[in-house]
Length: 211
Image (cartoon, rainbow, N blue to C red):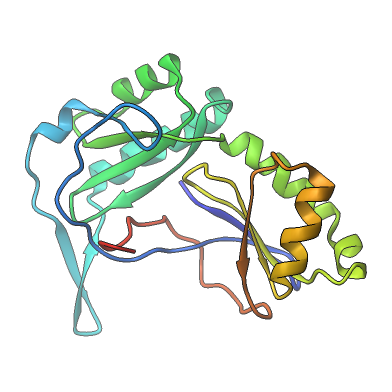
């Protein structure tokens, strides 16, 4: 359900929120980032909103939130080798589940979705695999600092793409860390300054068009 991020400074666990709406629905296709949709996606549901501080903001309907919670719990407990994470698309009133292809997990999603709309997409890595990498790198933080690589955040991405490393020493990290962990290690490097306290963890939301 969440994109897990270690914020280092003290070390905290949180989640990154990507806010926004989406454009026209994608067509399910084979291959990476392709996938399929549940039967509930055949029905139109207007997005729900609420007013906060004079601003209208989207909200996740209770049936969809409940289905997401069930999928997240079942994915972690019984399909950890497949489940990568999920996000909510409030504009289209659906959830997007990322998973390493698995017939058993797909069946579980179909049975769990009820009449809600779930879009299932392929992922390169499971949350279980990325969490192991995240723990490994977290254990090496002092060693990396002594080598001049200041790591601000470590985030196992909910879409299963890899572990995102936020660092002030981008070039040095790109050169040294793959050499240490192996060129096939699922590491993604971004430039990030000193640690900024994160808000309360939430559910990732689908990005805006082009973002």
